[in-house]
Length: 373
Image 1 (cartoon, rainbow, N blue to C red):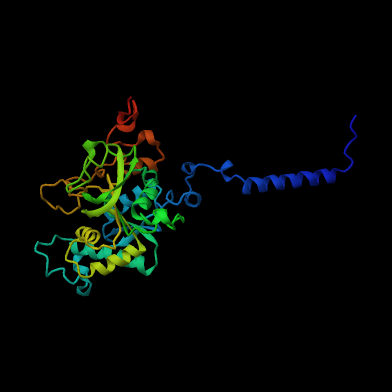
Image 2: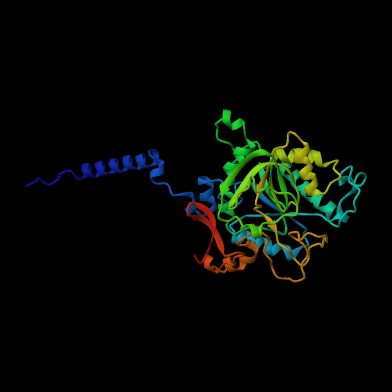
């Protein structure tokens, strides 16, 4: 028969020492042993520590939406879409043409332009320039800038996640080959502009980063009315990133602090509209590091109050004859269309889909598969 323990305090001390040692092992040993995959985290303050892209600003320091203060018709749908997507957006006051002081006009705005100006062109250019100036003045490391009618897929955080490595590989090459140090930004440190919301974009070279992405639209839901990467470089069911040569439409783009500084200086004497000026900047300025994304991540939702640009193209963001919220093109689960459903607490089975299929591996081939299959 074993003798009873005559020193319970000693036994208790042993247990405490053992527990402290075990806790220290868990914290300081193999950290992956207790780690939770980042995709399971949803709280922004937790996710930001684990994965800087899966946060409420998609890995940028800020998300700005350039919006006229009196456009209350656009404000709430935009904020609802952001809330439904777990994004934090700061509204940035835009200005109308008539309210732009003459000394704020680009130097060559009237002299060298041989086409009629459309209403809003000057205000748009100056408003975005003001956003860049704020980035510089407040030393903001990077910002995603959206138009007030921008739309995106509800799964935007998952869509943006693989773009971090892709942008780094495209923009930091060949520097990262020689410097394996971790970049300060999840998108790398050498980029100036990431053009993710456009209606046409072409590459400047033959280097591409390809991502298999189930959220990419099938070919009959692609859209553009300008050049895009051809079938020789873009495979169905993939999103590709590349050094950008030119682009058109500026529904959504990210700019770094150093990129904002360059664009503020360049824009002072431009005679182009915003998107053409950005495109020219990426094409002409050798020191400008621009990255293009196709298919687009951000598009524009058509609305009744948009300016009617006319022409032969059915451009995203064009004027509509009704008041209902419409999905931006190329988005399966529009954040705007589905915001009310999500904010009511209804699950994914209630989301409205623009097409009822997804990409999957079928017989070793990446193919479109119907939801019914």
